[in-house]
Image 1 (cartoon, rainbow, N blue to C red):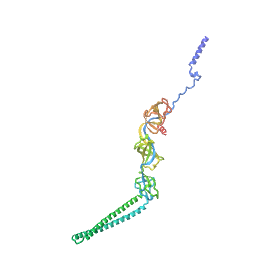
Image 2 (tube, rainbow, N blue to C red):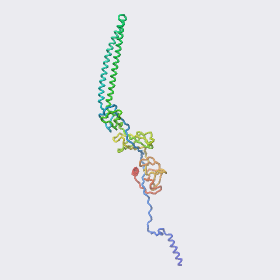
Image 3 (spheres, rainbow, N blue to C red):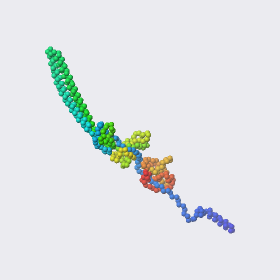
Image 4 (cartoon, helix red, strand yellow):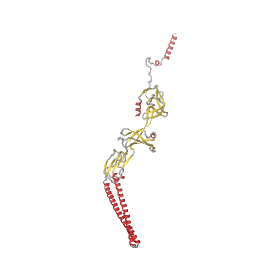
Length: 402
């Protein structure tokens, strides 16, 4: 009997050891708290929003005049005695820019006037000689007729008849000569008048005038300088004051540009001005792979020829579902966005549309107001449970732009 009771007690103790909880088996106290569950990580999300977007291309280049007009001297050897325009001045067509000394031309004009007067006197003298020769010719012809009549009756001999014939021929010759003298005198007068007109033209060109309205870009003329036709331009004018951005763009961007597109141009150190694409080059440089674009700009005193400038061209626009650029991941598997639904991350393949500096259009794969991970592909993966913290889309976009 004592042995039977001992074996039953031993069996009960063994059962208690086998069935005891692990915590008790390990010697833990029954009052210790259970371990806390692991918290889901906090992830910044933004909502996909429907908004307009514009795709832009950047162009850089130099401000240049649309058309440059060179103004020089048309007369040789005259001294510059007055300068009436300077660099930066806006001038009208016909405005006097400089004046050359005209004293030499005025002296030649006076000489030309005397030559014209002399030619007119020669004409008068030749006309008098013509009148005298005509009178002598009439008298000689009358004498010849009388002598011929008398010779036919035998009253006058052949010798006298020959004298009358010779005299009439001589008077006719003098008449022809006198008439040629008139023609010569008139030719001298015409030459003197032509010379005077040339001198008057030279006198008018002593005033160097602007051939067109515009902006004076450069003045080479100096007081006292001897003007020369071969000496180059005295002034350079931007026709009508039109300044353009002459820019080079890559061949990949060139195809998106077209005449008439609006451009925001910011000169170095200046304020932005609005322009339009005036010309897109039809060719690409084979060495640089760049094409040329000309952007017309409005007249402005802040634009400086030769200054560097940057332009932004709006090449396309649309209304679509937009997310920050940082929410899009592109790799060898394609383009994806991480969407958070019911606190679980889902990776979706998407189709992209237009893009600007900070946002991208999602044409397929994400609906409006869905929450997307602001910085995808860094902290979470497909199926992870997260604690989404919604951020302002504008703030995230501004950070992405920077």
